[in-house]
Length: 44
Image (tube, rainbow, N blue to C red; front, side, top):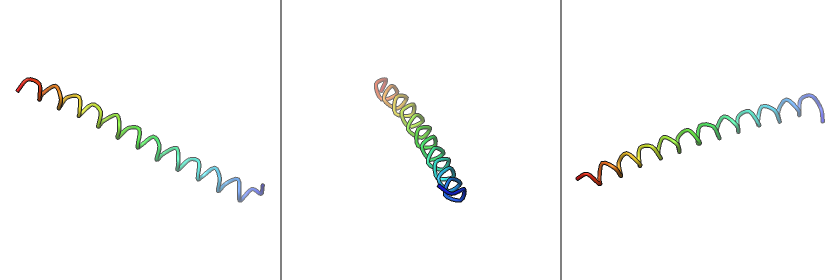
């Protein structure tokens, strides 16, 4: 693999990791919000 190809692969891997981390964070936030909403709905 040439240096240029290695650089492209590493950059792609970094971007995929960043997107994965962002999706993970959004799903964790959504889970927290849904739990709070469900608890609030029980008290009504």
